[in-house]
Image (cartoon, rainbow, N blue to C red; front, side, top):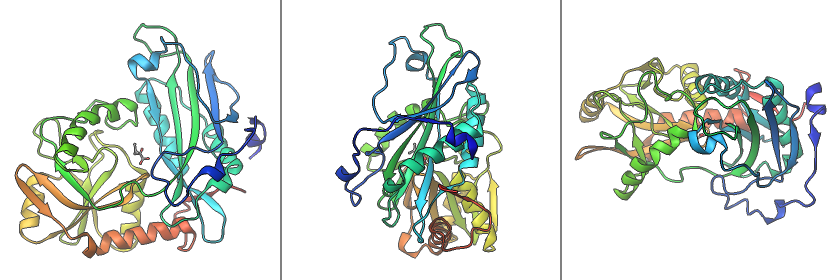
Length: 356
Ligand code: COI
């Protein structure tokens, strides 16, 4: 890609790579040597640059600090079995990023900057892409308004950045999740569909309560009746009921349009599993569980990949599962991992090589 060659690069004086314990990465704790930055000003994107990773300095009146005009993405690059590296479905993240930008009244970003910038940065940091099983390079593109002005209005200047973090699995063990009945993540017409900072900030208090009660996650429900399930904050949710894979529909704009969610739906259909995207009530899940028909529950996300659920708590009732017996979750995870590792055929053309 010609554009990539035009990106100005300032190299870090030394590399931190040797200081990183790749067997104990956790999630989002380590960052590579470089980062990408592009400024939006005077109504257009300026040429992006790659710089040594480091702090950035802003005026205390910077708009985003006060009004939260900020969006982000989560993408992963994988080390394939033949040693090459590839990015998983980054064009889907680009599309979602621009949908989030639209909802938050921010400028769209070009494919050149988003995809070209990401590839160029990954090419420079290729040695950082982990070889360990279930590890990956987590790619975090983000954008925020940089106006220095306290009026509530869309910023006229923005910063787009990409940082890279080698990561291990996000959830180490099967999750225990609590159905949320007091707080709300999103309502029709709100910002639930956008990957914007405020959605995550708003989840922290209810999440802290759930954690105090011993749960790993919240299962959000609809804002009107707390009757229909939505998602779990960092993951979309799937249930296997009577041989059918069901997941909340995207139709009313209250849940995140997960790239892993979409991939799981496609892979499930590829192997002949019926998938339904629709409204799912807690009552339906309880009844199916009582009848012995509800056999698997798992979450999907870029960070979390496919994470099994061992318990769903609703009021004083627990729906318990046996994650070690989950055949479908294991099959779907193996298929996705196979595609990412380059050992299953990439029939949907999902992997974008880091190098040409
Ligand atoms: C992701 O899965 O990429 C996410 O954005 C979830 C999260 C870690 C905030």
